[in-house]
Length: 400
Image: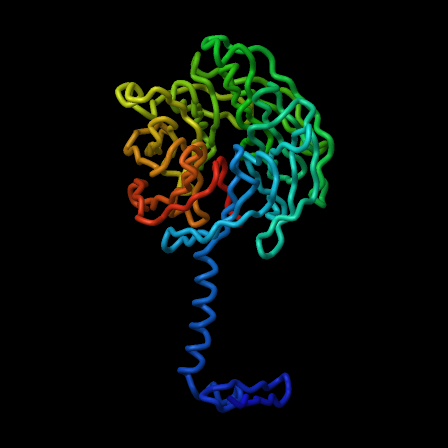
């Protein structure tokens, strides 16, 4: 077929090809259908981009090769084909820098372990940027401070918190280690020693909070923003034998929701942002005793507060479900649903960027599933086909 060529008469007045004829921009003003079609095409492209978002998946276990990525369609709940984003051993938890240019993960390499940082390019590919060993062993969690000046890692086995300074270029410096002391010993098999399990920050950014499963406490650190440093501030006592794992703040910053791994309960604390202390006001189970008695193993794993501030979601390993709890005006919770994840051992859950889906990682079933969130009730609905296979998924993180 002979190719037709279109000539343009200058950059200021380019031609537009319509029905194999060249029309000037001036003529388009007289043809509203062409203008409308042009803008509808632009809007459709933008909409498709907004609906499809990159999801990074941290993994663990011998069958996994590193950090994987898929695209998730927020309109249909479907996942694209899986690809390997970064080959590394045991990237079990991921964290994003506030500038959205860097991604950090706990990991193991050769005879060492610590934190590795990647640059995220425009296509969502991960390019290794920095790595720093942690002298106190492998971390189970990490988070970057809202300032972007440092990150914290929680060493479950080492019983410590690692403070890693971050340069403007995203480069990590050698960590300062803060050791926790003594376990509560209420459950000897799990609490004879300290076991920090999560690290995060108060909404004001002035405090770091670290739930410690072995101590039955949330350890609080004061943050010095001028020096980008932390110092021990105090502790918040939780229920004996509960085993604090992860926590979240309410949307209005007034309450802490602490998930206890061993007792499968959510404890509610009233938070004082000025003093950096909290008062326990209530506790609610995520599963009934009867439901727990039907399993040989039960363990709570992750807790989230919905962006709307109306609901709390927790994952239950053993029962392999997500509990949905409504938040009342006084901060207290009411259990309204338990949703099967269509997989096994939900170590991590997360929300899609639009807040319309809850994504659940089934570590033992090698699955990641999507559940639609009812905008009026917060309840979950699984859609057929909204699942993909990934080896040993342990962490879910969307690219913003």
